[in-house]
Length: 332
Ligand SMILES: C[C@@H](CC(=O)O)C(=O)C(=O)O
Ligand SMILES: [Zn+2]
Image 1 (cartoon, rainbow, N blue to C red):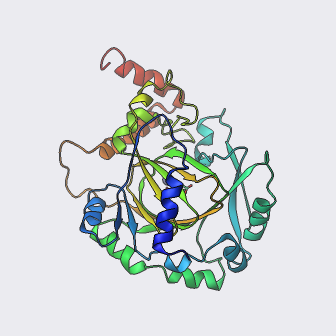
Image 2: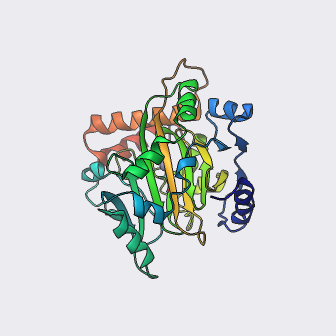
Image 3: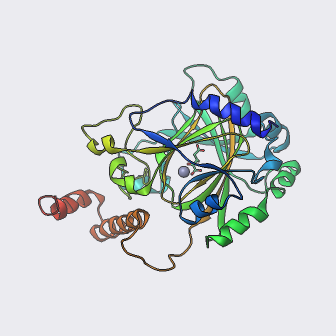
């Protein structure tokens, strides 16, 4: 397990290697977990990298090899993609878009089979990304490591910020260079980096108009239609206004990723496989409506309006003309 100073020097090196895109990025603050400023940012639903939480200190030994030797012989969901991008889709919504073709496939396999696929991988073959909620199928050593997470710290954070229940811990084991393209989630997230380095690109909820998410009824709901590697400024002109934030995480780092914040997550190419564990929490109730509404509240409102219109029309194809009739030439 690398010391904090080794991780810091590696982070500086990684920062020089990550891909630059068309938009400017500013760094997310990197603060000790007990810094009052860190607490203020979390309270204010702004992202912050936390050091020293020891949230997953017991998992810093979770190299892919350690996991292969200790996770047991249960099966785990492994996604495969023809390229390094893993664009999420909700298979329950495919029925709404008959022409939809899933960009990835997935199958359940043992961790050992997954690791064999990765070690035997050759250029041109599909990329693989293990993404599985941690459950009781893991071996006793992993259970012991999981139980030793700093649950007191994270439970105190949940209570202090009045969040809802922990919904899941996703174990993420990625090949070198895999990317989860830009999207937002509807849960609060403490994202713990365990092995290897990940670069997050973050965009605050007010950037909704620059990131052109798929319609809510689409299988790619919550995902941006934009491809940062091939930005289509004709189709998505407000992409030019995009301003991003960046967080580079090394082993032991925890990123507070606020609900509705857009993020793209990259396993930094050339730094090997990555292992992460996220902690998704239901967001808390809105204590009191304060005007003007915050951008993420407007996103939630837009989602509800889209859902209501789609349901009322009972035909996704009628949604675009109705919304255009409502807006074009009247509000534009
Ligand atoms: C799955 C993860 C992305 C990644 O680590 O590839 C993510 O989007 C999240 O934790 O909200
Ligand atoms: Zn996410």
